[in-house]
Length: 339
Image (cartoon, rainbow, N blue to C red; front, side, top):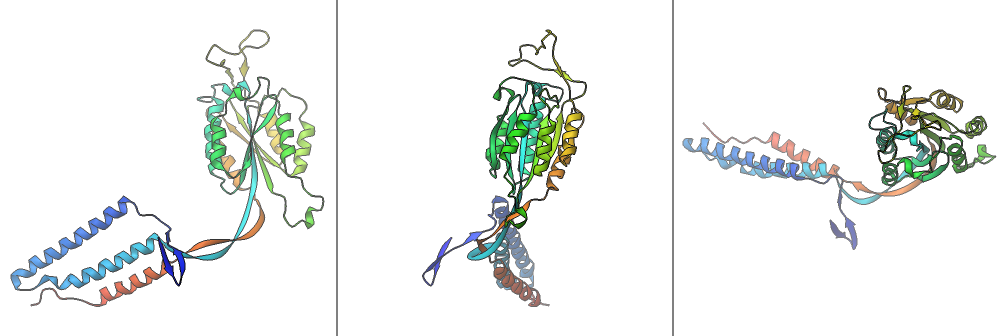
């Protein structure tokens, strides 16, 4: 809604938009009150009285009920300058896309269960930047750090094991790729105006690492200040790995059906060395809620303080007028039927 005041165009906005339930409630109230008036008039008629003495109160009550509705809708016009302090952390999601993630020991499959849990995770951190790295024998940045949850959700929904070249899981490439993406910490960070952003890493895999020695990379990662939260997906009993297209199961070099099992020991050690925690996602245990709580406890640093222009909610004015009219309604009594 637009109107002009002294040559200046003012835009009137509403904090809340009324829907059909509110409209039905207003109509229902109006009809009930009309019924009350007609009933009063009918009872007063045999006594020679007029029931319309309440007519002016009907207008009064309609007025202050309307003002209360306007106050609830939150009329906002004019501009107020408010300081906004922005803070947050970076959360990197490292997801294993090796063929073992298609194993069905976690229903419907390890990867499908992970995708469902990640959809919840991304919606819980609107003030933080999130990024996505996928890996198997090699690692790729699927989505750089972003505040755009919808874009990240789209990338997560398209995850499948065919996105990366076939090969055995190697945890070194994703961690080294992560190190190249971490923001460099200046040598005189103590005197820096803007402190480095806190970084949390969520590494999701079944723990079967067939790569090289992980220790040197983990030591560098620990010195960077990034905390790694590892999530082990699968079961210790293990499962066969279905072929793409449902044509049987994968076989090892000896021709036997390959069995993939959750290996938690290296994931626990990685989390411990970087100040993180280890969680499991199995057929009987879903510790993703605990992961969300742990990520919430990672405090982000303040990045900047800036001033933004916001519409000023003027609900107080119609509310004050409505309260005054309600007091008048209570204090002024009307006798409809006199003896």
